[in-house]
Amino acid sequence: MYIISASLVAINVNKDSSQRNKRHLTMLSALTAIIVHALLVIHSYNVHQIIANDFFSMLSLIFFVISLLFIISAINQPIDTLAMLIFPFSAIAVLLNTNNVAPLAPSVNVDENLQIHIILSVLSYSLLTVAAFQAIFLSFQEKQLHNRKTSRLISCLPPMQLMEALLFRVIFLGLLLLTFALTSGFIYLDDIFAQHLVHKTILSILAWILFTTLLCGRHFLGWRGQKAVKWTYGGYFALMLAYFGSKFVLQLVLNQS
Image (cartoon, rainbow, N blue to C red; front, side, top):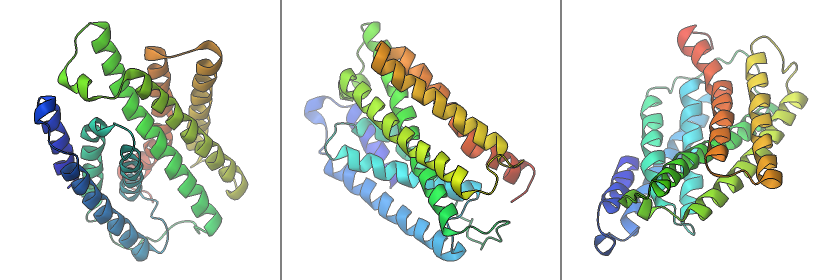
């Protein structure tokens, strides 16, 4: 259903505006996908009795939150085109997690406070992933307009001013949640700079610094366009390494839980 929704958006992009289908089929397939995805996430929680913290479960959970945020935003914002980028990744995340249903034997006791930290981390990462997707489209949009070439994809995107405003709004909310996630980590984790967490902590703090610098540059120096896009990429790359780099190495390369 994610793929169908993304395909319908792609078909509409390739049609003239007078021939484009109504949004209801796209929204219906997207809502169906998100509902089924929610059921899978709930099933995973029932099996593990905690928020599953392995690589593929977290990947699926994060893209569920991203898809949900997108569909809520699409109700009153003309951002349907972003579905072509977001929904295929959501579909891949679901497929990769299909057989990952065996109960976990966690190496640490995941209490309620730690689960709050995990939820805040997931929400912040999800919002900043949406910002990274928006930055990709904004970069493409600006380059097309700069070269005085307007493709059908560009014509379907919201105005560049709106895309930029949405980008900074999402970054602000994601940074706010990242601040809460880091704060909760310092409060609830016994040693946030322990050997297995130090790289994640340092990279998360680096991402926080980069996104904070971007917002300050936007407010005080008027940063926008490609400069804003590059800082978004830098902050997101650091955050991606923090969230998934360590999990990938420990779980899939070194085969450690």
